[in-house]
Image (tube, rainbow, N blue to C red; front, side, top):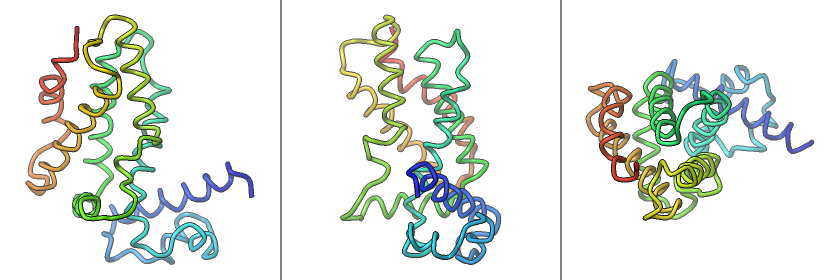
Length: 194
C-alpha cells in the first residue's frame, strides 16, 4: 500500500471516529461503528490502532488536517500576525463545533501524565511547521519582532493556545472559546507585533 493510501485510510478512520465521538460520545461509540462510518475494514483499523483508546492521541491529526485546509484559504493580502490570529480562531471554531469537551479534557490529562509520545508537542506536526513559516515570513517582512527566534515565538503561541484550551476544559466549556480567544490572543501576542 502506498504512503498516500495509508495516510488516507488512517485519516478516514480518525475523522470518522472523532465525528462519532462528538455525535454520540466516546463511551457510546464502538470500533464497529468507526469501521462502518470510515468505510474501511477491521484489519485496517487494527493495523493503525490497538483499540478505541489509541484514537485519543489522534486529535492532533484532526487539527493538522484543518491547518492544511486553512493554509490554502489564506487571503492574499493578509499579514502574518493576522494569519496567526486567523488560524487560532478557526482552530477554536473546530474545537467548539466538532470536538467533545470531555474527550479534549481526557486528551489533555493523558498528555500530562504520559511517559510516551506527547502528540501535542511534536515539532514535526504540520501545526508547528506552518506556524514557523508564518512567523519567519513575518520577521522577514518586518511585521513580527526579530528580538526572539521563530521557534521561541511559536512556542509562546502554542503555550497561549494550550492555556486557553486548558481553561476552557477546566470551566466545562461554559463560554465560547473562539469568542474569548478573539480578544485574548491579540493581547497575549501583542509583544511580537511590530
